[in-house]
Amino acid sequence: MTRSLFIVIFLGLALLSGAGAQAAPVLRGSVTVDDDMIRLGDIFDDAGDKADTVVATAPPFGRQAVYDAEWLFNVARANGLEWQPASRTDHVTIERAAHAVPAAQIEDALKAAVAKEVAARGGSNKVLVNVDNRSITLYADPESDGTIQIRDLWLDRDASRFTATIAAGDQPGAHTTKVSGRVYQVTSVPVLTRRVAASDVVGADDIRFVDVRNDALASDVITDPDVLIGMSPRRQAVDGVPLRAGDFRAPIVVSKGTLLTMIVQTPYMLLTAQGRAVEDGAKGDIIKVMNTQSKTTVDAVVDSASRVFVQTPAAMQAAAGAGGRTLAR
Image 1 (tube, rainbow, N blue to C red):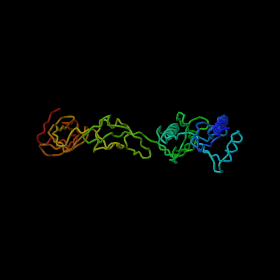
Image 2 (cartoon, rainbow, N blue to C red; image 1 turned 180 degrees about the vertical axis):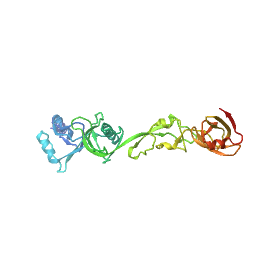
Image 3 (cartoon, helix red, strand yellow; image 1 turned 120 degrees about the horizontal axis):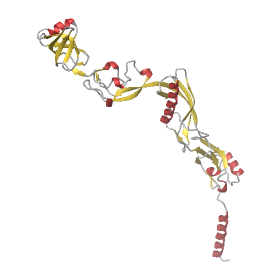
Image 4 (cartoon, rainbow, N blue to C red; image 1 turned 120 degrees about the vertical axis):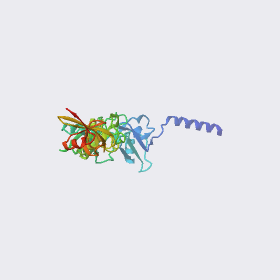
């Protein structure tokens, strides 16, 4: 037999032998599974018709399980796979596919559940919750609808602390964890959307709402926006800050230096005189007004942009003074 013919026959036999052989299984180092079971095909490449064989339960969502060389060898042998560990350090890490639920989503779910319970006790229907463990992580099935369940909610007597179990959905095996924290009841209060000068009038478009903790809410803070609309600040008011009732008044209708008609009214007569405003005043305010003839200053109630009423007997006489005009009644 010639050398060339021998080589051809040898290569042909090798090819025929290789075609009938199955590739040896190869251990995979790390795997992420999206099922609740671990199969041979998750652990080994080239597991052949054994690939779908279930060998273990998958770890919880977002968790890992590590299987060592001894366990892997026993599983391979029990299922007829021709595999042996290369060393005692061989292992595979299996992780369950999951996504971390955002902290804001957890907090929103807690707020809704706690607020419902507080309102049922007669408290505010708005709350803030501060979770004790700010680094808490909850893992959910990537294919879930993202619903967070609040279980076993407990509030103390004054509804200032809570404990609960939160779950990433209602499916079997959903990741759960316990949480605790503080509860603060809050009130929505109107604040300004811009800086408002003392000469400005507050309109509906100048108002927005912020939530303020009840334990930080002063007793004179304005909670009704209707109290603000049509009013002016006594001094420039800043935006975004809770507002106090004493900081607002009716809009200024009389400015300092304005010439006014001073009216002294009794059941028997009506006296008028010219005066000059010594200070600004809103409708209904009592301001200082000086008689332009007698130079006497009296207190008068602002009635309009051009008229004030003087009401006390002594002030009546001073207001009438020189230049006054009396009309019999």
